[in-house]
Image (cartoon, rainbow, N blue to C red; front, side, top):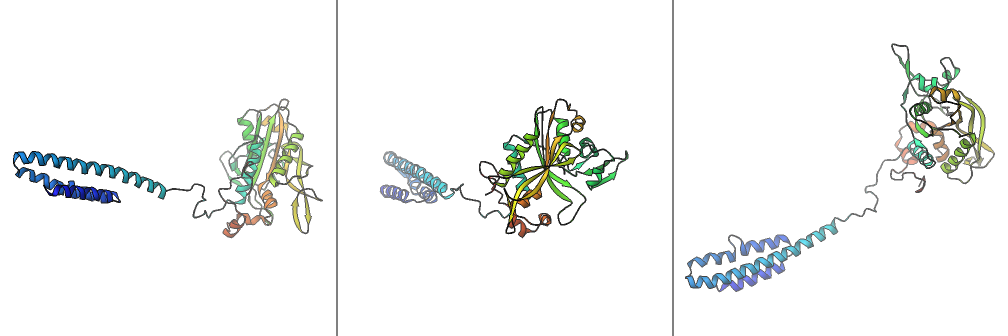
Length: 358
Ligand code: PHE
């Protein structure tokens, strides 16, 4: 029992000196474990006289409780410290950009479609979709292009095999069938854009068999050609991020609009550099017009009540003009060097508030 004081104070000193939970546990085992020093003294009680045992037992219990309490306190302190240091160690700075930086790039086509959608969304347009594989009705007939209409030849359509009833599916030659699908499925007022893939059997310097268009459609009771022009003027200044872009309507023909107009924007070519804005030149960016009464009728809308405009633009062309991409065919070469050069960082999502392009 003479050892008790020494054992107790040694254990307390070791507890105070413990730097880790492991060290602390080793002290616990050495003092209070099965073969621990205090446990050893407890065992020696049995050999004592009843009187001695009483006194020694009380001292031993007091020493054991003291060591045990010191262990608990030290453990709580070390645990709190371990948590703090772990929190500090595992701290993540969410303001840092991802490391390693993402390698992928957003294709200019996707970027430009996102930019266009952001602009039109701000004006209150919804994004609508239709299938790439269309039928005759949606791609042609409902758009006032009947069976033997010469416009069908003009479209260089990719057809699928004939079905039992003689009809053939086709790859849509423009995004205009989405006009039909939208008007059939929804009641006016309608205000949609439809970006997507289109296909024509045509391949040379300035044509690829697959390309992209964005369609616009507004139908209500009062929308007129002035709204169409205002809408497109607003769009081009925002899209090209310049203060002034002249917009010109050139009389044209489309079976599904009446009147119809080709849309040109102003540009200058000084020193061989093409610039969008006021200048001597004009560039065509798409077709437009007031939706033809026959088209409204084909969708079950009364042309005496409803009217509106539609437009269609080529996405590749807009991308080439905005980002100075000289060759259409490179869009679909899947050349990584090209993508690295002309592509966009994935996290830079175009918004009007945050900036279309950064
Ligand atoms: N669909 C026409 C084209 O592909 C473009 C267009 C759309 C014209 C809507 C007028 C109205 O050439």
